[in-house]
Image: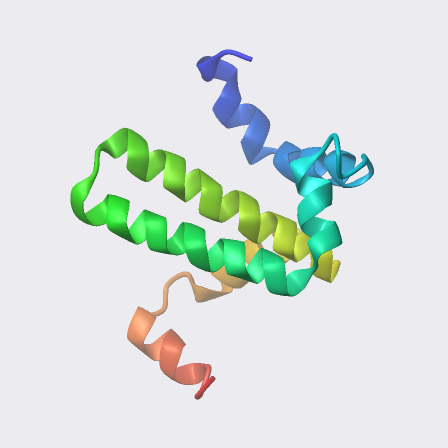
Length: 113
């Protein structure tokens, strides 16, 4: 796949389909399957780990490292969504519902978590 077509391909939810396909493989062949087999606690731990690496990259590393760590966070989040039986579309819908609202107002409307 060349970079010119990459953006169009992944913005059409093909990444979610890729994760679905990998989930149907075996853990010995698919990291995605091994994450799903390990369960939500493990996936959550990976998200925490990757988010920490992204935070560090944002503060003091190269742009390429920031992009790589962002990709890792998004990938693991999408695997977590898959493990919960949730679609990426719902994340996009949640973001769309926030459009046009102050971030402070939106956060306050969620109440304490």
